[in-house]
Amino acid sequence: MSLLEVRDLTTSFQTGGGEVTAVENISFSLEKGEILGIVGESGSGKSVTALAIMGLLPRPPARILGGSIMFEGQDLLRLSDRSMQRLRGPGIAMVFQEPMTSLNPVFTIGEQIMETIGAHESLSQKDRFARAVEMLEKVGIPSATSRMTDYPHQLSGGQRQRVMLAIALVCRPKLLIADEPTTALDVTIQAQILSLLMDLRDEFGMAIMMITHNMGVIAETADRVLVMYAGRTVEQAPVGRLFDHPLHPYTRGLLSCVPTLDQDQDRLVAIPGSLPEPSRRPPGCRFSARCSYAVPACGESIPPLAMFEPGHAAACIRVRDIG
Amino acid sequence: MGGILVRRLLGALPILLIVSLITFAMIHLIPGDPAAAIAGMSATPEQIINIRRDLGLDQPLLTQLADWYLNLLHGDLGRSLLLGQPVVQATMLRLPVTLALSAYALVLTLLIGLVSGILAALRQNTWVDQAAMVFAMLGISLPSFYLGLLMIIVLGVDLRWLPTGGYVAFTDDPLGWLATSTMPAISLALLLAGLLARITRSTMLEVLRQDYIRTARAKGLPNRTVVMKHALANALIPITTVLGIIVSLLISGSVVVETLFSIPGIGQLLTQAVLNRDYPMVQGGLLITTALLVLINIGVDCCYALLDPRVRYDGG
Image (tube, rainbow over all chains, first blue to last red; front, top):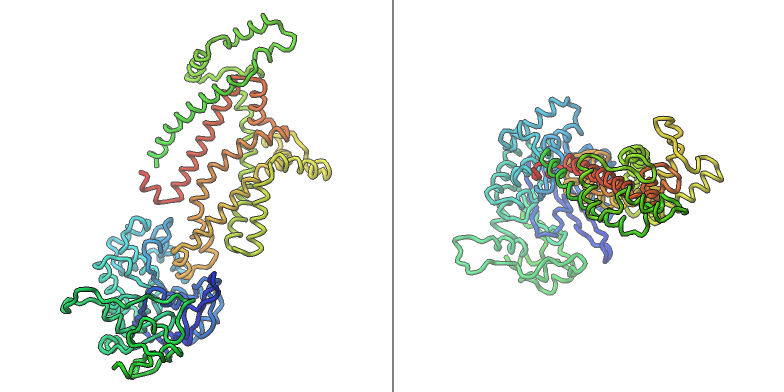
């Protein structure tokens, strides 16, 4: 049994212009200790998927239309609010993209870590303090004991993200969802946080869902990759396969966007056009309007996700033709 | 923290100076002569001139003003022309009445305003939200004297539940105080509770959208903790700012309400003083009231620093 098994998850949002789907028929699984990278442009449905797993989609306006999210054998979509709340922290934890605004400005970081422990375990104040200090040391905050009484505004962005990690990991979750954990940080800090995440994965044996739009982050951390476009999965593969033999034109586009020094390029490569708005998605393959390989058949029906190699699937009818 | 306090106290001095100047100018601009009022209808012109000389009202205005400031430096605000009492004594006798009434009204304001505002925010766009906001609108739109009169007619005259007016000091008879103060306090509080409910609602809605609320939910805190701890602690910061204004409005609102319910507070005292051109009483009474309001607002600012660690550190 996989740790997490998402099947045909479909969610929608009520907007001024009617109901639009945010993700459609997303399926993937995650094993213990595995790192699954989820890539895609902003608006492709990565964060919505994460929030749906956490049970934190704002409902309304969001709605879950179908599918299941099995975590350790129980369907999270059928859990009561109370059971879901107990699961957040020791079962599934999450770190967010915005370390600057994700900590409560009026409480000390010590309080914010300790109350997480208090919500899930009955420990004395003293033990909770010790545990919080230990966690702060683990995520690399120097002189942790004296930082416990600091307020978030006294910390740098990188330190705040470390504190966010400490909050997320203090109850030893089995699954950590990291939603663009390094996007808002300086490049040097990004590398530090990523290697810290890898170390903690090894130490705690937790699985990580690494959500990012950065192919470099994927290459460095992920075991398997899920590529999302406009709310649908377009390709899924082990990380090595994906970088060596990308099948879907969108994945190829994403990979060729990463500039390399040995290539002789005058200009940066970009995928022409932009992500279609949810209400103006083309019929058929949603990438067809931007795809240089598109033929009329691409616009007729949504291509199914088909397995081309063991563990390597893509949703494109032209894979065999474009080689 | 101590630095803020000292700076704010020093900053209050110019405010008091300006308020006393404006009061002096205004009261002397209103037509009417306190000497004539004291002397009565049948007084001869000579009698009035004598009284004017005794009171120092025949002096040039600037001299009168300078004398007033000079006496103020000695802690002497003069005597009320009407009551014969020293101004300080007359004010201090009436002030506790107004303060007790304002405190009662403030408790009602906070209770009604915060609770209905938080409920409305949590149940946004439901009937709870709409009911709370209609109630708030009603509170804001109803003039306090109209509401007071309605209550006197219904609760006082028809149902005879509460006395229609008068005042019993809290120290003499707490229950009697509650009976005489409840209607005035409600008519004072309803407007401000409506104001506070609307501010609380919009602030809570704003705060509940913040990333750190999502974090609080993501770490598995119960909804109660998320709302009453994480959201409220942040919402209270802007709400506290409004609290200073609310207290000022309570004390100025007491002028109308004390007259309506014949409560011997500072509002009634000052109304009488203005109507009778009791120059020293108006001057001194307003100065003391202003000083009090400034102090309350400084207190509110200190609360603000207590609630928001960013102010505590950055403000020095």
